[in-house]
Image (cartoon, rainbow, N blue to C red; front, side):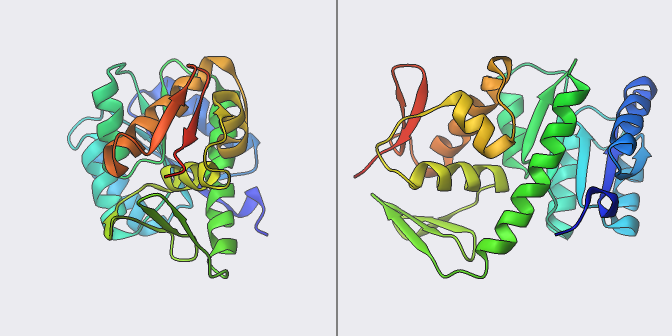
Length: 229
């Protein structure tokens, strides 16, 4: 298993104060950190350094974060943590739709940012482990191929991010069982804080948009469950 010292992180942030703070904190964690301040430089650094994870600001001079994320994922899929000062749900869903795996709203906790970067990398490692297995999970109209990391709804493939896929798999382990938001945060993101439960809500909304509104249901306002049939 690779160590954090072997992991490369590309930070794309035009606010020098934030960029410096993120670089110092991730470097202190043992990551190899590269920082750039605009979209064109981000794409050039991405092609040159092949980072293991990207921390990407939503609002950038020139190419914005959404377009940068789209082009990165088209060239070579990579875990992306998007930073945003925008609070509108539609902006967050658009970010997830172009391939971002997770997001954080500014201002944010450096401790939480580090936890989310580690969680993204753990999900990549877990995906590699699942790839050696030949497992297909079927729940109602949804078919989940864990080896190929593909999801089909009534035969049509749904394009999910890594985080959405892992969240769906977690719910599919026990269809009908209620998973509280804090538990899902701990299982998928690697930490559990009440203030961060909106992250789960946003990813569930993305799943409903891609799989259908009735696939994941809200239970008593405290958690989510995958329908049995």
